[in-house]
Amino acid sequence: MGRLTERLSAEHERFLTDLFPGDECTLSEACRAVHGVDSSRLSGDVLAVVRPRTEEQVAEVLRFAEAERIAVMPRARGTGTVGGCVPAVPGIVISLLGMNRILDLDPDDFVAEVEPGVITGDLQREAAKLHMLYPPDPASSGFSTVGGNVATCAGGLRAVKYGVTRDYLLGLDAVLPGGRVLRLGGRSHKDVVGLDLKRLFCGSQGKLGVATRLVMKLVPKPEATASVLAGFSGMRSALEGAASLFRAGILPAACEFMDRATLSAIRQSDDLPLPAETGAALLLQVDGSERAVKAETERMRQALDDSGPLSLLEGRGEDEAALWDVRRKISPASFNLRPDKMGEDIAVPRGRVPDAVEACHRIGDRFSLPIMCFGHLGDGNIHVNIMYNATWPEEAEAALAAKVEVFRLALSLGGTISGEHGTGLTKKDFVPEQLGEFERAVMQDVKAVFDPSGIMNPGKGW
Ligand SMILES: Cc1cc2nc3c(=O)[nH]c(=O)nc-3n(C[C@H](O)[C@H](O)[C@H](O)COP(=O)(O)OP(=O)(O)OC[C@H]3O[C@@H](n4cnc5c(N)ncnc54)[C@H](O)[C@@H]3O)c2cc1C
Image 1 (tube, helix red, strand yellow):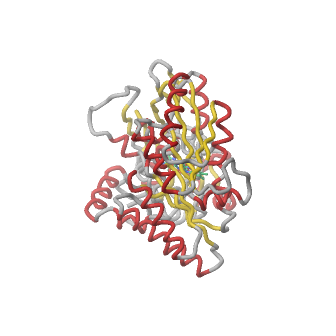
Image 2 (cartoon, protein in one colour; image 1 turned 120 degrees about the vertical axis):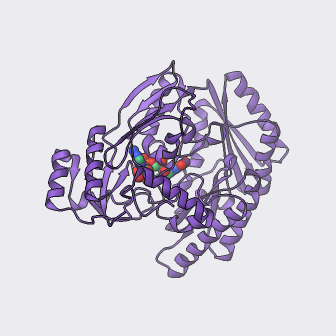
Image 3 (cartoon, protein in one colour; image 1 turned 90 degrees about the vertical axis):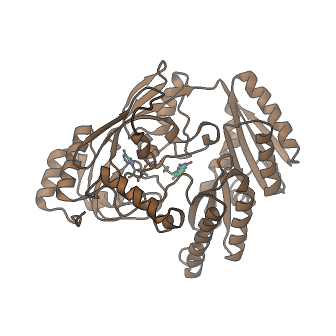
């Protein structure tokens, strides 16, 4: 792997504007700057932005980029929180938002074929019209894309019952550096011929190639859903309540929790349908046939009752939205505590969640920083928001030290530094704490098979 080209010559620019006519190629400073950031708020140096509409254009630009040794970064909606699509070295951003067609939705095969730039929520809505469900449901589903979700292996609210994006990927076409096209998998729900290379793309953070077509598995849409918002005096009783559900054999479609700091952040700007003395809350959903949901909700109430909830609110169908509003308010409300946050997404074995949450609170106390814990309890995936003021050097330093302790805590409990957001730029320095040298070397060897020149999204990952 030689050095990568860091500037575009006039000839390079001419090639790109010929291949991507009109506004499909942008060299303007303002547009390049916009495409150099994502939700992590990190920024990088973009040489050009191209918006292919066809796989052929993707192949051509990757053939050119490999020949000229220019880095490329696939990019969708930029909702990633770890700088996954932010250039670590100067490069060409390939925006996939122009490839946004749902190619097929098949109620017999239960598959969707889509281009990568389709918004996940649009796929969910179109599938629902045909009584099918696309289960992966990141909280960003209204604005992130299926391609971005595949490249990050996005999780979400329904993962506890339905699994993550990886579990729904049946087939994938991807263009590799040099313009080679890989066609993997297909519409069959089962396939054990050859190595399962398509799954390597899931969570690969755009480091292997550019996905241009995805075949996703669908399931029948459940007839009904019901949700319960339960308030508890403290974290231990809330987590005990959740454990009693699983012990009773109930598998909720969603199982979220919120700690005291999270609830108090929301209360600073919004009303909460929970008693003032609530110290932790669970938000649960069950789905299935009308009869099954009715019976499951009743069983859920009984199981939770043993842990002495302070309040139990139930909603069905349209009434559920008000309960889930509480969950949606968390992100904006976090800034009631401090103007900046380090939003981490550790995951630990499910039985260690109570220990992890209590230890995070102790870390917050020690560094005198508000730390909010909430998230996907059913998967052991805890969102740890370390709130701080970046303009106060002491707080900024403390927040960084707290983040390191949170990562080490997750690892000490047998968990991971990232359950769903990936490592991108913000966590890349901590990857060696989780993955051994040999394991990383094997991963780098695998990457070199797909990307021998190292032009795909360099400078992050493992
Ligand atoms: C409010 C909010 C809530 C969120 N909630 C969740 C959540 O519940 N669960 C969760 O997992 N994440 C969540 N996220 C994180 C983020 O939405 C996901 O990581 C999402 O999958 C990113 O999709 P995107 O379309 O924005 O991709 P981008 O951010 O544009 O890109 C993400 C990565 O994918 C690569 N990539 C994109 N398209 C392709 C392609 N076609 N081929 C190859 N590589 C590609 C990029 O290079 C980059 O590394 C949340 C983010 C926000 C802001």
